[in-house]
Length: 358
Ligand SMILES: Nc1ncnc2c1ncn2[C@@H]1O[C@H](COP(=O)(O)OP(=O)(O)OP(=O)(O)O)[C@@H](O)[C@H]1O
Ligand SMILES: [Mg+2]
Image (cartoon, rainbow, N blue to C red; front, side, top):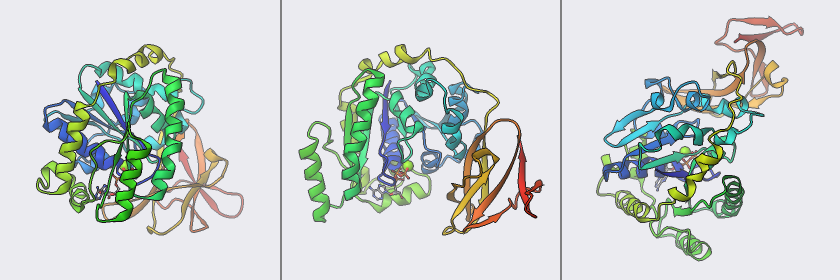
């Protein structure tokens, strides 16, 4: 089972676009594929038309050992399954704080299905936190999308350094492939960037690259891979080439196999009563929204904005053990209690805090 993690801490460089289209192309070519979304933004599922509310069994419950992986896997089309995520996955880092072996949770979860798929494609969030570490630890190969910007090139060295550290932990080499994305060959910058990638990383940089193509964006916005949207566009051809190049590249699974042997016996030390709770509030897209409460010593933490059914909703998942917690939102610098929660408690300053009981 070839396990390919798409990784880059830079946001918007094309991790999800490549994950969903590579997975779909591989499946169309007859390879059995599982797409795993390690990003609480849940974009992989959305980009393939799977709505997270279709199933309440997600990667989060699997990683916490609450359900077996087979229960959360959903079929999307012939040869293509998905293990989706949603915002609650952002509590994973907190829930796992201090737990030994927390970087190997995904690797452990994959063990029961290791003979069921030819490819596992892992989409990662745009940061090198515990979730991305889990993706790297569970992978046998790494695919780094790089988009045309100075920041992308500068971030590459840092990312390669992180991967070298991980190699020491998993005790095997992780073949790294770099794929240029969003390329417009009419621009000097893009042509130069391709040249530089080939010169600086001759053994890592793939020959295939993905052109800048609006059809990719349009296809994802209606939940389709490019193979179902437009078979005449540049991106369709690019993904055919990329898929062929990946299929033909050496399979490093055998080298990575010892990862299971080394880490599969990591002790389960998670407190099962800890739950990821999603706090959410409707507020304008350009607002600054934070939350503070008993659970974070009243040090405000930022929420993430999403469009949900045409509304701008801000949310954050926080890991909470059973108990009662007072909290408030900080909206554009003003403290407000949770409009969606009628339970309140005196804040001893003449006002009220919202109160949540777990
Ligand atoms: N080759 C391309 N041509 C045109 N648009 C693209 C291309 N690749 C990606 N995009 C668009 O750029 C945006 C960001 O891409 P994508 O979501 O795949 O990046 P990402 O690395 O997964 O982002 P994040 O870091 O937030 O997870 C999306 O709107 C996507 O449709
Ligand atoms: Mg993404």
